[in-house]
Length: 160
Image (cartoon, rainbow, N blue to C red; front, side):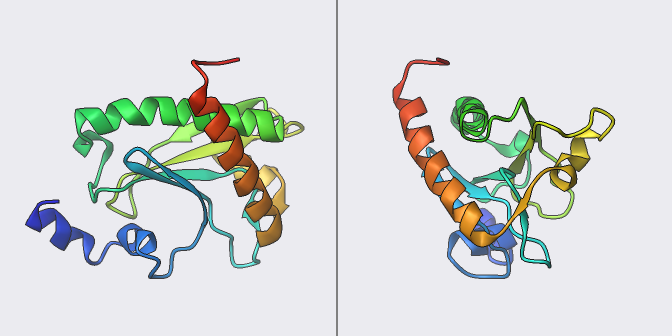
């Protein structure tokens, strides 16, 4: 990491999370290639939207455009593999992917499952609110299952 990038990451909440420090929390699913994958953190009520995943770059880079070509090449398959794992483990019919990056200048991408039963008129970005909200124990169990499923998917040649 270049000195200016390292300095930029000193106050970064996501870099701190990767070091096990700071206010951001989330259940780690695994570290794959140049990315960390977490289940989204719980809200003030202690509940989290089931299956909301966040892919974060290991290297401190602010935006999607700042990923190297090898990082970008690794991100595509990882995103698809995670969506497949969510579909397999939760039976969700659809997974939205969103790179927003307006609040924290460290690349992170959200994967938002749309659970069965969510009404069609619910906008994509409110899928979390309309789906199941679960406690830390349920999140940890899902993280274990997703980690195991992702290992199986990454060892196979493509979609089943």
